[in-house]
View (cartoon, each protein chain N blue to C red):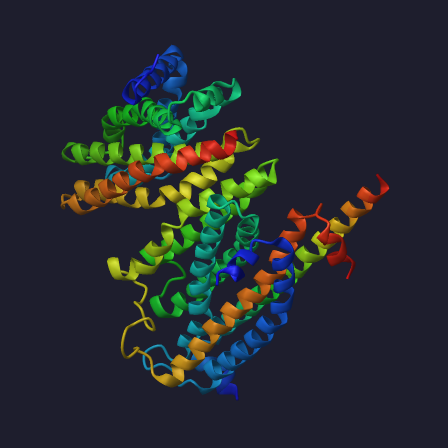
Length: 226
Length: 53
Length: 244
């Protein structure tokens, strides 16, 4: 039976989400990590509210980056381990459709979940509620971009022995502009000035990555699989 | 002459820069030649193994 | 007309040409760097604002330029290897990576030493410095990815893909001084029309730039020969080549 591109996309997406929700502990671990890391900074640096507010954007973003990295390793790994990935690649559906579905699923369970939890973290870091909107918007754009950058890195390192260390080494330099604009947008929102410029740049990065990264990630998987 | 060495007071910034630049150039040359030499040795060894087989 | 390009796909040809070019590149590099250093340190007049500290430009600017040029070369060579499956592309990409990384480090260190007297700080998180630092991390990433694969051909292709993804950083570094309010000074030489520098300061700089490029060419030729030998160990032409 001939499955159309859109149906294939939805099928893989549904499968990924079903698999993720079957292991709720795996879903929660990056979130818990996010919460723990954001707690570490105030404990290690300072608990004064005014100082917390100053470092809040950076702390939030570094924590989001690191916890997204944790779950990226698993993006292709389990499917590569049991041979499903090769079957998917041979399936006749474009590998890029499958990669897009998997990456979107990854973002939904990690990045989007982070965005939903971020008001809690924001309160803990003394971010004023007026800045929450910008914070969540910038985190959404940023984590989506990060899922895509991570897909490229995961595609390149799946199956390697010290793959997760290499993954971080590859993804983090690429994610630095993201950090700069994302934290910058949140910072401006906290201090009350317009975050529009930083948000636009962040959105531009997101669009650029979402358009080009699928090709790179698919090419990376082909290199690993062939 | 002393004026030259003191570089208008900036000697401790200027001379380390040129020194490090020289070191980088030398390292590049030395490391590249070592790489080629090691590759040559490995090629000779691979040929020797082929001949023995 | 394009035969010279096709010939470059042949490992023995590349091995031979690189060997022949190396001494020429070195000799010319020595002359250019020699003149540039002497003229830059002795004959160029001190800068009105920066005094003698500006002389750091004679190593800093060529190093920074070369760090970008080498990365671009690595990405282009890698894509030649990836798209057209020409193994010599991967050889050039692998050879150029450590050279480029060392020049990036040189640019960062000399820039830092220049920044201390000029801006009062060894480091600032301004766009150009930050993106140059990111470039160093990208180099390290590519150099770490290649040997991680058991199959060297696969490692080459993965490293090529990664370097292509990272090449987006190169125009960011170059245009960062134009796009953002940067601490780092803007373009000095690459302006259409009259450059901002007087001739006595400019010529040594251009000479150092040329000298560094030629030096890069010389070291690249040596490393490429090593890469070719490593990749073509089993080939018959290698027997004759290593016996000499």
